[in-house]
Amino acid sequence: MNAKDLLKTGYKPGPQIDDMLAMIAELQARGIISRKYIFKLLKREFGDPPPRFEMREKPLPCTEAIRAETKEEKVNLTKVRQKMAELLCTPVIQSGTIMPDACPAGPSPTDIPVGGVIAVENAIIPSAHSADICCSMFATFYEPRTSVSAELDALTTSTRFGPGGRHHDDLVDHPVLHEDIWENKFLKSLKDRATIHIADQGDGNHFAFIGEIEITDLVAAQFQAAGHDLFPTFRGTLRALVTHHGSRSLGSHLYKRGQDAARKHTAKVGHRIPDAAAWLPADSPDGQAYWEALQYIARWTRANHETIHSRFLDRIGADPVESFGNEHNFVWKRGTTYLHGKGATPAWNDEQGRPLLGLIPLNMAEPILLILGNDNAKFHSFAPHGAGRNLSRTALMRQHRGTDHRRHLIEHHTRNIDVRWFNGKPDLSETPIAYKNADEIRAQIKEFNLATIVAEIKPLGTIMAGGKKRRDEEELTPKQIRQIGHRKERRRIKQDLGSY
Image (cartoon, rainbow, N blue to C red; front, side):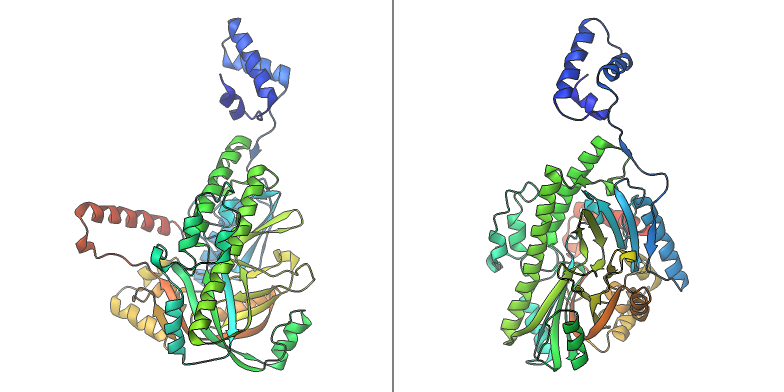
Protein backbone atom coordinates (compact mmCIF):
# COMPACT_ATOMS: atom_id res chain seq x y z
CA MET A 1 0.00 0.00 0.00
CA ASN A 2 1.21 3.48 -0.82
CA ALA A 3 0.11 7.11 -0.73
CA LYS A 4 -1.75 6.75 -4.01
CA ASP A 5 -3.96 4.06 -2.47
CA LEU A 6 -4.83 6.39 0.40
CA LEU A 7 -5.60 9.31 -1.90
CA LYS A 8 -7.88 7.11 -4.00
CA THR A 9 -9.99 6.36 -0.94
CA GLY A 10 -10.55 10.10 -0.39
CA TYR A 11 -7.87 11.07 2.15
CA LYS A 12 -6.36 14.44 1.26
CA PRO A 13 -2.63 15.15 0.71
CA GLY A 14 -0.74 16.46 3.74
CA PRO A 15 1.24 15.38 6.84
CA GLN A 16 -1.54 12.95 7.78
CA ILE A 17 -0.62 10.76 4.80
CA ASP A 18 2.92 10.32 6.13
CA ASP A 19 1.56 9.33 9.55
CA MET A 20 -0.80 6.83 7.94
CA LEU A 21 2.00 5.29 5.85
CA ALA A 22 4.10 4.92 9.00
CA MET A 23 1.22 3.11 10.72
CA ILE A 24 0.75 0.83 7.69
CA ALA A 25 4.45 -0.08 7.74
CA GLU A 26 4.25 -0.89 11.46
CA LEU A 27 1.14 -3.07 10.95
CA GLN A 28 2.72 -4.95 8.05
CA ALA A 29 5.89 -5.52 10.10
CA ARG A 30 3.66 -7.20 12.69
CA GLY A 31 2.28 -9.49 10.00
CA ILE A 32 -1.03 -7.71 9.37
CA ILE A 33 -1.43 -7.70 5.58
CA SER A 34 -5.22 -7.66 5.02
CA ARG A 35 -6.02 -4.38 3.21
CA LYS A 36 -9.56 -4.43 4.55
CA TYR A 37 -8.38 -4.80 8.14
CA ILE A 38 -5.62 -2.19 7.71
CA PHE A 39 -8.15 0.34 6.44
CA LYS A 40 -10.42 -0.46 9.37
CA LEU A 41 -7.59 0.31 11.79
CA LEU A 42 -6.66 3.48 9.85
CA LYS A 43 -10.24 4.75 10.10
CA ARG A 44 -10.26 4.02 13.84
CA GLU A 45 -7.07 6.07 14.25
CA PHE A 46 -7.54 8.86 11.70
CA GLY A 47 -11.26 8.92 11.06
CA ASP A 48 -13.19 8.36 7.84
CA PRO A 49 -11.93 10.08 4.67
CA PRO A 50 -13.85 13.23 3.73
CA PRO A 51 -17.05 12.51 1.81
CA ARG A 52 -16.55 12.39 -1.96
CA PHE A 53 -18.62 14.42 -4.38
CA GLU A 54 -21.18 12.48 -6.37
CA MET A 55 -23.66 13.49 -9.03
CA ARG A 56 -27.06 14.44 -7.63
CA GLU A 57 -29.91 12.01 -8.15
CA LYS A 58 -32.17 14.79 -9.46
CA PRO A 59 -31.21 17.91 -11.42
CA LEU A 60 -31.47 21.38 -9.95
CA PRO A 61 -33.89 23.92 -11.47
CA CYS A 62 -33.41 25.18 -15.02
CA THR A 63 -35.31 28.21 -16.27
CA GLU A 64 -36.24 28.32 -19.96
CA ALA A 65 -36.30 31.45 -22.12
CA ILE A 66 -37.35 29.46 -25.17
CA ARG A 67 -40.55 28.47 -26.91
CA ALA A 68 -40.75 25.60 -29.41
CA GLU A 69 -43.38 25.76 -32.15
CA THR A 70 -42.48 23.38 -34.98
CA LYS A 71 -41.86 19.64 -34.80
CA GLU A 72 -38.12 20.15 -35.36
CA GLU A 73 -37.97 22.78 -32.61
CA LYS A 74 -39.74 20.48 -30.15
CA VAL A 75 -37.38 17.58 -30.88
CA ASN A 76 -34.42 19.94 -30.52
CA LEU A 77 -35.68 21.33 -27.20
CA THR A 78 -36.20 17.83 -25.81
CA LYS A 79 -32.54 17.02 -26.48
CA VAL A 80 -31.43 20.31 -24.93
CA ARG A 81 -33.48 19.67 -21.79
CA GLN A 82 -31.95 16.21 -21.46
CA LYS A 83 -28.42 17.60 -21.64
CA MET A 84 -29.13 20.37 -19.14
CA ALA A 85 -30.78 17.89 -16.77
CA GLU A 86 -27.64 15.72 -16.86
CA LEU A 87 -25.40 18.73 -16.29
CA LEU A 88 -27.51 20.13 -13.44
CA CYS A 89 -26.86 16.99 -11.41
CA THR A 90 -23.24 18.18 -11.00
CA PRO A 91 -22.63 18.91 -7.28
CA VAL A 92 -20.94 22.30 -7.70
CA ILE A 93 -23.59 23.73 -10.06
CA GLN A 94 -26.35 25.80 -8.49
CA SER A 95 -28.78 26.45 -11.35
CA GLY A 96 -29.11 26.81 -15.11
CA THR A 97 -30.89 28.56 -17.97
CA ILE A 98 -31.70 27.78 -21.60
CA MET A 99 -31.63 30.60 -24.17
CA PRO A 100 -33.88 30.93 -27.27
CA ASP A 101 -31.09 29.69 -29.58
CA ALA A 102 -30.41 26.50 -27.61
CA CYS A 103 -29.29 23.35 -29.45
CA PRO A 104 -27.31 20.22 -28.42
CA ALA A 105 -23.55 20.42 -28.83
CA GLY A 106 -22.12 16.99 -28.07
CA PRO A 107 -22.89 13.31 -27.44
CA SER A 108 -21.12 12.88 -24.09
CA PRO A 109 -22.97 12.91 -20.76
CA THR A 110 -23.35 16.43 -19.27
CA ASP A 111 -22.19 18.23 -22.47
CA ILE A 112 -23.56 21.75 -22.10
CA PRO A 113 -25.76 22.72 -25.06
CA VAL A 114 -25.26 25.84 -27.14
CA GLY A 115 -27.44 28.48 -25.51
CA GLY A 116 -26.83 26.93 -22.09
CA VAL A 117 -25.95 28.93 -18.97
CA ILE A 118 -24.94 27.58 -15.56
CA ALA A 119 -24.21 29.27 -12.23
CA VAL A 120 -21.38 27.63 -10.25
CA GLU A 121 -20.16 28.49 -6.76
CA ASN A 122 -16.39 28.77 -6.35
CA ALA A 123 -15.55 26.50 -9.29
CA ILE A 124 -14.74 26.65 -13.00
CA ILE A 125 -15.92 23.92 -15.37
CA PRO A 126 -13.76 24.10 -18.53
CA SER A 127 -16.17 22.07 -20.67
CA ALA A 128 -18.92 24.59 -19.95
CA HIS A 129 -17.10 27.30 -21.91
CA SER A 130 -15.89 24.80 -24.53
CA ALA A 131 -12.67 24.70 -26.56
CA ASP A 132 -13.66 27.83 -28.51
CA ILE A 133 -12.88 30.01 -25.50
CA CYS A 134 -14.00 33.62 -25.78
CA CYS A 135 -15.80 33.20 -29.08
CA SER A 136 -17.04 36.75 -29.44
CA MET A 137 -18.42 39.60 -31.53
CA PHE A 138 -16.79 42.94 -32.27
CA ALA A 139 -18.16 45.86 -34.32
CA THR A 140 -16.54 49.02 -35.66
CA PHE A 141 -18.67 51.77 -37.21
CA TYR A 142 -17.28 54.06 -39.91
CA GLU A 143 -18.44 56.36 -42.69
CA PRO A 144 -18.66 54.68 -46.14
CA ARG A 145 -15.66 55.23 -48.38
CA THR A 146 -16.26 53.00 -51.43
CA SER A 147 -18.39 50.14 -52.77
CA VAL A 148 -19.25 47.07 -50.68
CA SER A 149 -17.38 44.88 -53.16
CA ALA A 150 -14.21 46.97 -52.83
CA GLU A 151 -14.50 46.92 -49.04
CA LEU A 152 -14.87 43.13 -49.06
CA ASP A 153 -11.73 42.96 -51.19
CA ALA A 154 -9.93 45.07 -48.58
CA LEU A 155 -11.34 42.93 -45.80
CA THR A 156 -10.07 39.77 -47.51
CA THR A 157 -6.50 41.05 -47.25
CA SER A 158 -7.00 42.32 -43.69
CA THR A 159 -7.83 38.97 -42.13
CA ARG A 160 -7.34 35.26 -42.68
CA PHE A 161 -9.63 32.22 -42.46
CA GLY A 162 -9.03 28.49 -42.47
CA PRO A 163 -7.04 25.92 -40.50
CA GLY A 164 -3.49 26.65 -39.37
CA GLY A 165 -2.19 30.15 -38.81
CA ARG A 166 -0.25 32.91 -40.51
CA HIS A 167 3.04 32.06 -42.19
CA HIS A 168 6.16 33.21 -40.35
CA ASP A 169 6.80 35.92 -42.98
CA ASP A 170 3.23 37.27 -42.69
CA LEU A 171 2.92 37.72 -38.93
CA VAL A 172 1.16 40.69 -37.34
CA ASP A 173 2.52 42.08 -34.08
CA HIS A 174 0.46 43.40 -31.17
CA PRO A 175 1.39 44.50 -27.60
CA VAL A 176 -0.84 41.76 -26.18
CA LEU A 177 1.78 39.22 -27.31
CA HIS A 178 4.39 40.82 -25.05
CA GLU A 179 2.50 40.72 -21.78
CA ASP A 180 4.29 39.10 -18.84
CA ILE A 181 1.94 36.11 -18.77
CA TRP A 182 3.78 33.22 -20.36
CA GLU A 183 5.02 31.66 -17.11
CA ASN A 184 1.41 30.86 -16.18
CA LYS A 185 1.33 27.05 -16.06
CA PHE A 186 -1.67 26.92 -18.41
CA LEU A 187 -0.06 29.23 -21.00
CA LYS A 188 3.56 28.05 -21.01
CA SER A 189 4.92 27.38 -24.52
CA LEU A 190 1.78 28.80 -26.16
CA LYS A 191 3.20 32.18 -27.19
CA ASP A 192 3.99 30.91 -30.69
CA ARG A 193 0.35 29.92 -31.13
CA ALA A 194 -0.77 33.34 -29.94
CA THR A 195 1.61 34.93 -32.44
CA ILE A 196 0.51 33.07 -35.58
CA HIS A 197 -3.19 33.74 -34.97
CA ILE A 198 -3.24 37.53 -34.68
CA ALA A 199 -5.43 38.80 -37.59
CA ASP A 200 -6.66 35.22 -38.08
CA GLN A 201 -10.24 33.98 -37.70
CA GLY A 202 -10.51 30.21 -38.18
CA ASP A 203 -13.18 27.86 -39.53
CA GLY A 204 -16.81 26.85 -39.08
CA ASN A 205 -19.35 29.61 -38.48
CA HIS A 206 -16.81 32.38 -37.97
CA PHE A 207 -17.24 35.37 -40.25
CA ALA A 208 -16.41 38.98 -41.14
CA PHE A 209 -19.54 40.99 -41.99
CA ILE A 210 -20.08 44.40 -43.56
CA GLY A 211 -23.41 46.09 -43.01
CA GLU A 212 -25.02 49.47 -42.53
CA ILE A 213 -26.91 51.11 -39.71
CA GLU A 214 -29.07 54.22 -39.51
CA ILE A 215 -28.22 56.38 -36.51
CA THR A 216 -31.34 58.36 -35.62
CA ASP A 217 -32.10 60.64 -32.70
CA LEU A 218 -34.05 57.78 -31.11
CA VAL A 219 -31.16 55.29 -31.41
CA ALA A 220 -28.66 57.74 -29.94
CA ALA A 221 -31.09 58.72 -27.16
CA GLN A 222 -31.55 55.10 -26.11
CA PHE A 223 -27.81 54.56 -25.81
CA GLN A 224 -27.34 57.80 -23.89
CA ALA A 225 -30.26 57.08 -21.54
CA ALA A 226 -28.53 53.79 -20.71
CA GLY A 227 -25.32 55.66 -19.85
CA HIS A 228 -23.39 54.86 -23.04
CA ASP A 229 -22.01 57.87 -24.86
CA LEU A 230 -22.34 56.30 -28.32
CA PHE A 231 -22.99 58.40 -31.43
CA PRO A 232 -23.40 61.66 -29.45
CA THR A 233 -23.39 63.88 -32.56
CA PHE A 234 -23.48 61.66 -35.65
CA ARG A 235 -26.81 61.20 -37.44
CA GLY A 236 -27.23 59.33 -40.68
CA THR A 237 -25.96 56.08 -42.24
CA LEU A 238 -22.82 54.34 -41.10
CA ARG A 239 -21.15 51.20 -42.33
CA ALA A 240 -20.15 48.57 -39.78
CA LEU A 241 -17.53 45.83 -39.82
CA VAL A 242 -18.52 42.98 -37.50
CA THR A 243 -16.22 40.03 -36.83
CA HIS A 244 -17.04 36.75 -35.11
CA HIS A 245 -14.34 34.38 -33.88
CA GLY A 246 -12.71 32.94 -30.78
CA SER A 247 -9.19 32.39 -29.51
CA ARG A 248 -8.07 29.88 -32.16
CA SER A 249 -5.55 27.17 -31.21
CA LEU A 250 -4.30 29.31 -28.30
CA GLY A 251 -7.67 28.91 -26.60
CA SER A 252 -8.14 25.28 -27.59
CA HIS A 253 -4.81 24.34 -26.01
CA LEU A 254 -5.66 26.28 -22.86
CA TYR A 255 -8.96 24.39 -22.76
CA LYS A 256 -7.20 21.02 -23.10
CA ARG A 257 -4.87 21.86 -20.22
CA GLY A 258 -7.67 23.20 -18.05
CA GLN A 259 -9.85 20.19 -18.76
CA ASP A 260 -7.01 17.81 -17.94
CA ALA A 261 -6.35 19.57 -14.61
CA ALA A 262 -10.09 19.58 -13.82
CA ARG A 263 -10.42 15.90 -14.61
CA LYS A 264 -7.49 15.04 -12.32
CA HIS A 265 -8.89 17.16 -9.49
CA THR A 266 -12.38 15.73 -9.79
CA ALA A 267 -11.03 12.18 -9.85
CA LYS A 268 -9.52 12.84 -6.42
CA VAL A 269 -12.56 14.43 -4.80
CA GLY A 270 -15.46 12.95 -6.75
CA HIS A 271 -16.98 9.61 -7.64
CA ARG A 272 -18.26 8.87 -11.14
CA ILE A 273 -18.25 12.50 -12.23
CA PRO A 274 -18.47 12.70 -16.07
CA ASP A 275 -15.49 14.35 -17.75
CA ALA A 276 -17.63 17.17 -19.14
CA ALA A 277 -18.67 18.09 -15.58
CA ALA A 278 -15.13 18.11 -14.14
CA TRP A 279 -14.18 21.31 -12.30
CA LEU A 280 -11.34 23.27 -10.73
CA PRO A 281 -11.95 24.95 -7.34
CA ALA A 282 -11.69 28.67 -8.10
CA ASP A 283 -9.75 29.36 -4.89
CA SER A 284 -7.14 26.63 -5.50
CA PRO A 285 -3.73 27.44 -7.06
CA ASP A 286 -4.78 25.73 -10.29
CA GLY A 287 -8.14 27.48 -10.28
CA GLN A 288 -6.53 30.89 -9.79
CA ALA A 289 -3.94 30.23 -12.53
CA TYR A 290 -6.64 29.06 -14.93
CA TRP A 291 -8.78 32.13 -14.18
CA GLU A 292 -5.77 34.37 -14.87
CA ALA A 293 -5.20 32.53 -18.16
CA LEU A 294 -8.85 33.01 -19.13
CA GLN A 295 -8.57 36.76 -18.56
CA TYR A 296 -5.53 36.85 -20.83
CA ILE A 297 -7.43 34.93 -23.51
CA ALA A 298 -10.17 37.58 -23.34
CA ARG A 299 -7.60 40.35 -23.86
CA TRP A 300 -5.91 38.44 -26.69
CA THR A 301 -9.17 37.76 -28.52
CA ARG A 302 -10.25 41.39 -28.31
CA ALA A 303 -6.81 42.42 -29.60
CA ASN A 304 -7.29 40.01 -32.50
CA HIS A 305 -10.62 41.63 -33.41
CA GLU A 306 -9.17 45.13 -33.07
CA THR A 307 -6.17 44.27 -35.25
CA ILE A 308 -8.37 43.03 -38.10
CA HIS A 309 -10.56 46.13 -37.85
CA SER A 310 -7.57 48.49 -37.78
CA ARG A 311 -5.98 46.83 -40.83
CA PHE A 312 -9.29 47.06 -42.70
CA LEU A 313 -9.86 50.74 -41.90
CA ASP A 314 -6.30 51.56 -42.95
CA ARG A 315 -6.88 49.87 -46.30
CA ILE A 316 -10.07 51.81 -47.09
CA GLY A 317 -8.87 55.09 -45.58
CA ALA A 318 -11.58 55.39 -42.92
CA ASP A 319 -11.58 56.39 -39.26
CA PRO A 320 -13.59 54.60 -36.58
CA VAL A 321 -16.66 56.41 -35.26
CA GLU A 322 -17.46 53.91 -32.49
CA SER A 323 -16.58 50.31 -31.61
CA PHE A 324 -17.56 47.71 -29.01
CA GLY A 325 -17.95 43.96 -28.61
CA ASN A 326 -18.90 41.10 -26.31
CA GLU A 327 -17.98 37.48 -25.57
CA HIS A 328 -20.52 34.65 -25.73
CA ASN A 329 -18.38 31.57 -24.87
CA PHE A 330 -16.78 32.34 -21.54
CA VAL A 331 -16.86 32.37 -17.73
CA TRP A 332 -17.83 35.57 -15.93
CA LYS A 333 -17.57 36.22 -12.19
CA ARG A 334 -20.39 38.04 -10.38
CA GLY A 335 -19.80 38.10 -6.65
CA THR A 336 -18.78 34.57 -5.68
CA THR A 337 -20.69 33.01 -8.56
CA TYR A 338 -18.99 31.91 -11.77
CA LEU A 339 -21.42 32.19 -14.67
CA HIS A 340 -20.59 29.86 -17.55
CA GLY A 341 -22.12 30.51 -20.95
CA LYS A 342 -21.74 28.51 -24.12
CA GLY A 343 -23.36 30.61 -26.81
CA ALA A 344 -24.95 33.16 -24.46
CA THR A 345 -24.57 36.95 -24.49
CA PRO A 346 -24.11 38.77 -21.13
CA ALA A 347 -27.08 41.07 -20.57
CA TRP A 348 -26.68 42.40 -17.03
CA ASN A 349 -25.82 45.84 -15.64
CA ASP A 350 -22.13 46.71 -15.31
CA GLU A 351 -20.44 48.08 -12.18
CA GLN A 352 -21.65 51.57 -13.08
CA GLY A 353 -25.23 50.37 -13.34
CA ARG A 354 -25.31 50.58 -17.14
CA PRO A 355 -26.99 47.85 -19.22
CA LEU A 356 -24.32 45.91 -21.11
CA LEU A 357 -24.03 46.44 -24.86
CA GLY A 358 -24.29 43.34 -27.02
CA LEU A 359 -24.26 42.12 -30.62
CA ILE A 360 -26.47 39.21 -31.71
CA PRO A 361 -26.08 37.88 -35.28
CA LEU A 362 -29.01 35.87 -36.67
CA ASN A 363 -27.81 34.65 -40.07
CA MET A 364 -25.86 36.11 -42.98
CA ALA A 365 -29.00 37.48 -44.67
CA GLU A 366 -30.49 39.01 -41.51
CA PRO A 367 -29.44 42.11 -39.54
CA ILE A 368 -27.14 41.90 -36.54
CA LEU A 369 -28.99 43.12 -33.45
CA LEU A 370 -27.56 45.83 -31.19
CA ILE A 371 -28.92 45.22 -27.71
CA LEU A 372 -28.93 46.62 -24.20
CA GLY A 373 -29.19 43.95 -21.52
CA ASN A 374 -32.30 43.88 -19.33
CA ASP A 375 -30.52 42.19 -16.36
CA ASN A 376 -33.32 39.62 -15.99
CA ALA A 377 -32.15 37.53 -13.02
CA LYS A 378 -34.71 34.81 -13.75
CA PHE A 379 -32.59 33.86 -16.76
CA HIS A 380 -29.23 34.62 -15.14
CA SER A 381 -29.17 37.97 -17.01
CA PHE A 382 -28.18 36.55 -20.41
CA ALA A 383 -29.51 36.85 -23.95
CA PRO A 384 -29.02 34.51 -26.94
CA HIS A 385 -25.83 34.65 -28.99
CA GLY A 386 -27.49 34.05 -32.35
CA ALA A 387 -30.24 32.04 -34.00
CA GLY A 388 -28.96 28.54 -33.21
CA ARG A 389 -29.71 25.34 -35.12
CA ASN A 390 -32.54 22.81 -35.02
CA LEU A 391 -30.55 20.30 -37.10
CA SER A 392 -26.91 19.31 -37.02
CA ARG A 393 -24.85 20.12 -40.10
CA THR A 394 -24.85 16.45 -41.07
CA ALA A 395 -28.62 16.11 -40.72
CA LEU A 396 -29.19 19.28 -42.75
CA MET A 397 -26.97 18.10 -45.60
CA ARG A 398 -28.70 14.73 -45.55
CA GLN A 399 -32.05 16.49 -45.98
CA HIS A 400 -30.81 18.45 -48.97
CA ARG A 401 -29.02 16.08 -51.32
CA GLY A 402 -27.87 16.90 -54.81
CA THR A 403 -25.34 19.49 -56.00
CA ASP A 404 -27.84 21.43 -58.15
CA HIS A 405 -30.44 21.51 -55.37
CA ARG A 406 -27.91 22.80 -52.84
CA ARG A 407 -26.59 25.42 -55.27
CA HIS A 408 -30.12 26.67 -55.89
CA LEU A 409 -30.81 26.96 -52.14
CA ILE A 410 -27.57 28.84 -51.53
CA GLU A 411 -28.25 31.28 -54.38
CA HIS A 412 -31.83 31.83 -53.23
CA HIS A 413 -31.01 32.52 -49.59
CA THR A 414 -28.00 34.78 -50.30
CA ARG A 415 -29.38 36.61 -53.35
CA ASN A 416 -29.37 40.10 -51.80
CA ILE A 417 -25.88 40.09 -50.29
CA ASP A 418 -22.30 39.71 -51.48
CA VAL A 419 -21.05 36.47 -49.91
CA ARG A 420 -17.42 35.34 -50.13
CA TRP A 421 -16.30 31.85 -49.04
CA PHE A 422 -12.69 31.68 -47.98
CA ASN A 423 -12.07 28.40 -49.85
CA GLY A 424 -14.26 29.27 -52.81
CA LYS A 425 -16.79 26.55 -51.99
CA PRO A 426 -20.22 27.69 -50.70
CA ASP A 427 -21.35 25.85 -47.56
CA LEU A 428 -25.10 25.22 -47.30
CA SER A 429 -24.73 24.49 -43.58
CA GLU A 430 -23.78 28.13 -42.96
CA THR A 431 -26.56 29.75 -45.01
CA PRO A 432 -29.82 31.06 -43.49
CA ILE A 433 -31.57 27.72 -44.12
CA ALA A 434 -29.35 26.15 -41.43
CA TYR A 435 -30.54 28.41 -38.60
CA LYS A 436 -33.68 28.99 -36.57
CA ASN A 437 -36.26 31.53 -37.65
CA ALA A 438 -34.79 35.00 -37.05
CA ASP A 439 -38.15 36.63 -36.32
CA GLU A 440 -38.84 34.02 -33.63
CA ILE A 441 -35.51 34.78 -31.94
CA ARG A 442 -36.34 38.49 -31.93
CA ALA A 443 -39.80 37.76 -30.54
CA GLN A 444 -38.46 35.54 -27.74
CA ILE A 445 -35.83 38.11 -26.73
CA LYS A 446 -38.75 40.48 -26.16
CA GLU A 447 -41.18 37.88 -24.74
CA PHE A 448 -38.76 36.76 -22.03
CA ASN A 449 -37.47 40.31 -21.38
CA LEU A 450 -33.85 39.31 -22.03
CA ALA A 451 -32.70 42.52 -23.73
CA THR A 452 -33.84 45.64 -25.53
CA ILE A 453 -33.10 45.73 -29.26
CA VAL A 454 -31.93 49.27 -29.93
CA ALA A 455 -30.87 49.07 -33.58
CA GLU A 456 -29.99 46.66 -36.37
CA ILE A 457 -26.99 46.40 -38.72
CA LYS A 458 -28.42 45.45 -42.11
CA PRO A 459 -26.31 42.99 -44.13
CA LEU A 460 -24.45 44.08 -47.26
CA GLY A 461 -21.74 41.45 -47.58
CA THR A 462 -19.85 38.85 -45.63
CA ILE A 463 -16.83 36.57 -45.74
CA MET A 464 -17.64 33.15 -44.29
CA ALA A 465 -15.17 30.59 -43.05
CA GLY A 466 -17.41 27.68 -44.07
CA GLY A 467 -15.82 24.29 -44.62
CA LYS A 468 -12.11 23.59 -44.45
CA LYS A 469 -9.87 23.34 -47.49
CA ARG A 470 -9.01 19.74 -48.29
CA ARG A 471 -6.31 18.35 -50.50
CA ASP A 472 -7.35 16.42 -53.61
CA GLU A 473 -7.52 12.80 -52.46
CA GLU A 474 -5.99 11.69 -55.78
CA GLU A 475 -2.74 13.32 -54.62
CA LEU A 476 -2.67 11.28 -51.40
CA THR A 477 -1.20 7.86 -50.74
CA PRO A 478 -3.58 4.94 -50.08
CA LYS A 479 -2.63 5.04 -46.38
CA GLN A 480 -3.47 8.76 -46.14
CA ILE A 481 -6.81 8.17 -47.86
CA ARG A 482 -7.67 5.42 -45.36
CA GLN A 483 -6.76 7.74 -42.47
CA ILE A 484 -9.02 10.48 -43.85
CA GLY A 485 -11.81 7.91 -44.25
CA HIS A 486 -11.49 6.81 -40.61
CA ARG A 487 -11.60 10.41 -39.40
CA LYS A 488 -14.67 11.14 -41.53
CA GLU A 489 -16.43 8.07 -40.17
CA ARG A 490 -15.68 8.99 -36.57
CA ARG A 491 -16.89 12.52 -37.24
CA ARG A 492 -20.08 11.25 -38.88
CA ILE A 493 -20.87 8.96 -35.94
CA LYS A 494 -20.27 11.78 -33.47
CA GLN A 495 -22.51 14.16 -35.41
CA ASP A 496 -25.27 11.54 -35.78
CA LEU A 497 -25.22 11.09 -32.01
CA GLY A 498 -26.09 14.75 -31.63
CA SER A 499 -22.94 16.82 -31.98
CA TYR A 500 -23.69 20.30 -33.34
